[in-house]
Image (cartoon, rainbow, N blue to C red; front, side, top):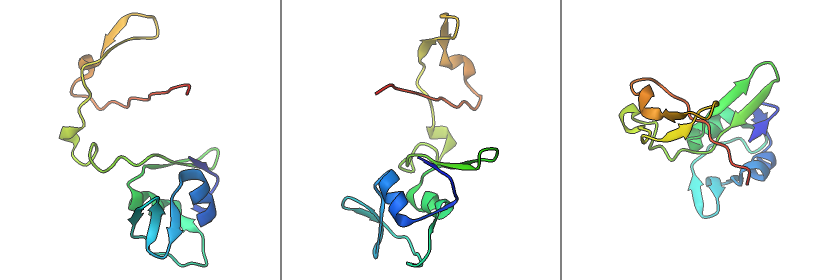
Length: 115
């Protein structure tokens, strides 16, 4: 989700993510996460990201904030558990590329789907 400010109204967060601010905290369906907040002000995206375990990135040039999906707190808590299976995919030239050739390096895998 992309935002134009580091502070947003609770209604905007709910519209974009489904997380609603309630007296018991941030809630999505029947799941709630404690979230102290002054009811009169906007929400800090940094506080929301921290509470929900979501990554938050700022793009300085455009002044945009990107709030990513929650990771469930499993894959990245311990770097030893964040292991990519040995996949083989075509590279930009159509030649086979094995992810195992990157073993021992930090790798960012970006996936995209049209649906």
